[in-house]
Image 1 (spheres, rainbow over the protein chains, first blue to last red):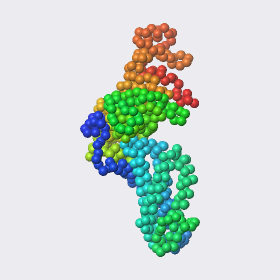
Image 2 (tube, rainbow over the protein chains, first blue to last red; image 1 turned 120 degrees about the vertical axis):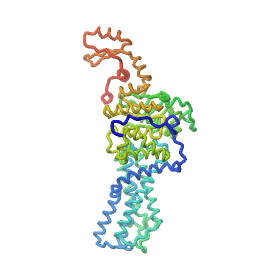
Image 3 (cartoon, chains in turn blue, orange; image 1 turned 90 degrees about the vertical axis):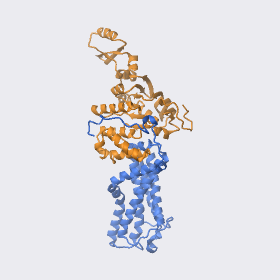
Image 4 (cartoon, rainbow over the protein chains, first blue to last red; image 1 turned 180 degrees about the vertical axis):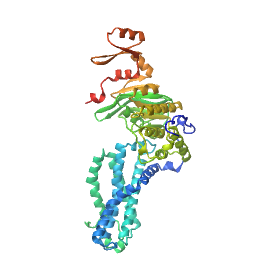
Length: 238
Length: 299
């Protein structure tokens, strides 16, 4: 229909679910038990449209670190075991996971809540608040996990011989979900971008460094660079 | 009606679609809504009029479950808002004052998202999305991103989104704010069409003409209190059906009379130019809420 004619039809159908029929649809689809799924799908739709922007945002810092170290160390075919670059990569993967899960979501969520008011659309949907939070946390967590996987794959091109265990990937996913939770919590209470920035600088930024210690410092010395879970045994740093 | 403290979601008195009982909302020391009570009946277009900061949007936000009242009881479609928010949300459509569409998504995707959130079955949602895009005249632009839409298009998409899940009650918060006169009139027509199809509509506005031409009944709210309630004709009659208007040193002065002959007699008693006309809703509004601009008055 052309602009200008838009009012000429029109009577909306008033079948089942029509205004005076009670308004709500009686649905027995499996989706009814997955209230959070539309939120994850919506985040996916937005990210799919601008995937390059989010990917560049997530990969930016880890790749700069990688390139600088690879360049300076001058050994582009270094291995995971016993090399400094091999020691660095797990930290960069975690950094990508954290920044992608936390930093992107906290800004996105805060803007959508306080400025664009997009969150009202979700709050007006007949879903529980917990579903709303789960949807956002899962959406951001999955995105952070995928970004960190891309970092890992990119790093694998420069550093040979990594063998991440399945437990390590689970740990990575937990980190992503934890920081996505933190992002939603911060964004829900923050009055604006200044509040989120303060919280990020005071709490989250130091945490990203401490989290790096979840990867054992001794991991790089182990055969084939297999990573372990557990607290940092020492103050091993970059 | 069940009390607000009730745990069960039992629908009662469907003819009263919206009801507020002594509703109060405080933000710290500021009282945004101070004991408002009114009812909206099924099939009515009810307008909430008031100057900026009067408490209109807060009232709508409380009715739509977005804000909790400090005191009082609210019922929508017979359900207490406080204890049955999900039941209320299933039965309302909301057109917010601000465009809160997902700007990165297309018009169609925005509607799809809304349908998913409201758990509409696939066949039903696809049919309904096409139908509504056609209804609001956005079929040809449905696959463009919302950030490229004009204000009027975005507003129409907001209305389509609010109607998607077939709510029996529609809330519109300043539906035509910032729109050109042509688009505004189209939105008015759309609201009347929806009402003709049986929908109950509660809208807030400070465009008097809008309330006068659209609403079956209006409530005038000021400083968080409902200061007048009735049909536009009743409110005008209360003030006097005829108005004598003239300009003096203090500004424009208006006097109201029940009959034209009384108004004419008064006008003839003045030595300067006067205008005799029928009282309009704006006269009622200004007389009740005062003539001072609110932004200036609050400085």
